[in-house]
Amino acid sequence: MTSDIVTRMLSILVVDDDQPVLHTVADVVEALGHACFRAYSVEEALNIAAQHLIQATILDLNIGEDDGLSTLRQLLRLNASLRAVLMSGALTDEVRAEAGRLGVRRVLDKPLNLEDLRGAVYRLQ
Image (cartoon, rainbow, N blue to C red; front, side, top):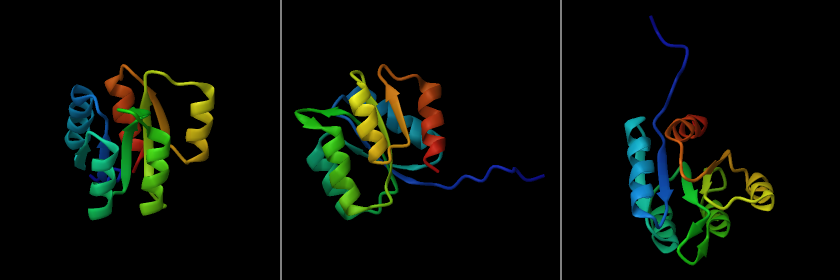
């Protein structure tokens, strides 16, 4: 018997300057069978995205001194079909609206709920 649900492996870039959060998100991504690239800074994220075919990203709204939405805009310039999930502990209606305009598939509140995170990763497929 075959499953009606077809999943495919994605190449996902996780960007967060909070190392424990980055590792948790990356571990979930890998446990779900996806390739995962980890970046602790915007510069590192852009370098990875320039060197590898990244199909999706899960990134924090605040990455050190940098803004996750402007980082997403830069990543979209490298790959216009990039799928995205945004994470933040300080979400506003304005941020949610801008994320929607950029095509963000899901916005997750921090602290992260692991079931919500898994669901967001599934939606990236």
